[in-house]
Image 1 (cartoon, rainbow, N blue to C red):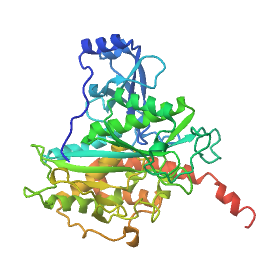
Image 2: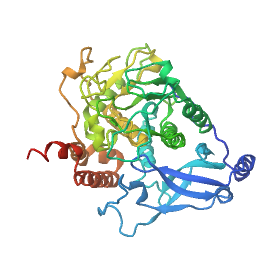
Image 3: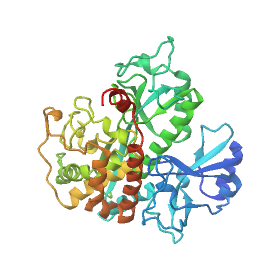
Image 4: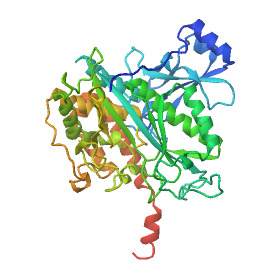
Length: 455
């Protein structure tokens, strides 16, 4: 899997930016970044000030806002809550296709006032890992497969999500994998969403209907890790916004509907050298030692970084035997029962598919975790297990079974602290502990259903 091109820059100089804004009547710009949950946060700025390069600041703690809206008071976060600067990546500047009036959107980095990348921002975390690859003259190439559901509107969170009615007046019942008829349903949403992906310069490859009722998978083209993470981030933002316009919810929870398929974000990864050659393949076309070492790194360190691949309580409901969601880090050639799959491919496209990450994972952090584990395997020259040709579900469950288990593994992971920095790991785990404690404070329907009448 060689490297493809990244974004085409719309504009970067003030003159080019103003011309772009004037051409489209743009009045303001969404200056956004992904917080640790992959949720877009930032500020709205007048187009004229954006084009002029006006300084934009935000609180340092915002990238580490919990999914509940709370903030951790761990000492790693300064009591003063200092500013960080937001710096646009002009390669991401496009029109915002969800806006009711002409508006632009640009993904930003968060920088400390001394110019260093803010350690709490997920985009910074991925860039830190890529810098480690650069010291070895290597560049990762990544391609995500993103699954999600389209459901009917849900006004009461106590009620389950249900499929929307489609053309025949009924809701889907599921089990329609790869159905083109079902892929043609909800056409008004799909027409607008396809156009949005073109506007956002998101390189979508194939589209399929998945197993669940109104569950879909869209594959993005392989490319530079930051550019691909930006695209996955904007993909989810656009899907949610456009679904709401059509009375739907685009749902990226890992297991949104009991008894239905979970949603993953499989990550295909290869690594190229300075000449663009795939280092996973030797000159004779066989697998190189680095290929096995990368797999071994994922096997060894993937469970320690599970909290970045499965970041929420709901994430762990997806890992069910027999569901094509993995339960361990076994690997095999074209084996979908293992956590690590090596698709059949020519040497130039030799790659590893990490099947552990859920659709609910922050793409920057899921990619960073995958790459950090693989790089550790290369640096330490680790030895992978033998490839598995049989059913991976017959092997031991080698992944953390719950969010608190994954939290404990990451808190004590020396690799995590080396790859991402002490402050990121401490802050990330503090926020995840806050979220988990918040979850434990809520009484579930299961408890009322079974405990109320019997205990």
